[in-house]
Length: 423
Image (tube, rainbow, N blue to C red; front, side):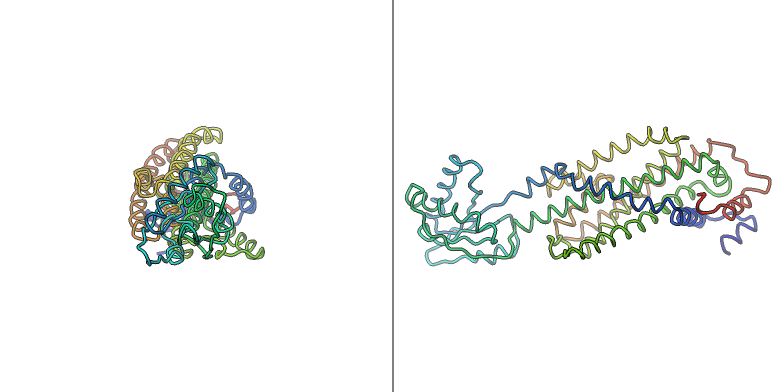
């Protein structure tokens, strides 16, 4: 039996069928309204904010900037290089890059510096091989240009005890390094977190205005008398999620077209740990989880308010708390595998942001399966709790009785007579 036939016959829809009716109504009402055009222009302002938000992740950038120069030499030469580096670093703070021992070589033994760097493992930005009289620096082209003279100075200081007679420094250029890959992935992680936060905060607030409008014109009371209030809650929540997905699709397509026209592509950016296709899929899933979590909170808050002023007052604590959650998730990026990251992964509101960053930085997929299952559990808990509060508060906002035609027929008449622009 179709939804319309069930309503005509005075029947009562099931929870999920009723939620589908509400979701379809709200989705089409918003999508085909003039306000949706202005809604699509909304991200222009967050995009400007995101471009100016470099200071938000100062600690992440500091972590991304750590790059070590490895030394693979015979024991005497390696120890002399490290001692010279430490001595010069005290005299020239910030001018000498960190140097670490990566291999103590035996006479005649060689070290594949190029292979180690191109594998992208660790935080090595370059490797020094050879001898004190003829050191060889293997690194990317930019770092070779920046560090060639420094390596010669350290080698001269290690060999002669002074920095006047520099030995010739051989070079070997590689396309990438572990440090460059880690730095790029950390920037991708931070960018993914900021984008996810802005999208969720921008789009989740739509459910508040929609609910307050319908409470003001008593539509919500007709809905409450006709179908279960849990269905109204679910329908509105998933309708706004659907509208958000449409908006993101439009913004993403426009942004991709602009970047492509400017000659940019994903190959110009650091490849995420899970790869770009999987990263986009996980980003979409974590957006849905984060949206449903925060949207259920906002919808429950909206049920407590009767005016726009009350909505702003009640939603402010939730918004400020979510900003703190975002900063907590940003801090977790610098503590991979530590207690902060594990806590941020377990806390439901910060879990989507933390896992997006992990998708950019790490290659393993199994943590995402666990995280998505954990977040889905909390989505069910939040939706259930929010729907319960929503039902209790909204049912108190007006008379429960419907019109003389009966609640189901009144609902049908409202759907038929109400145009999308009026919703």
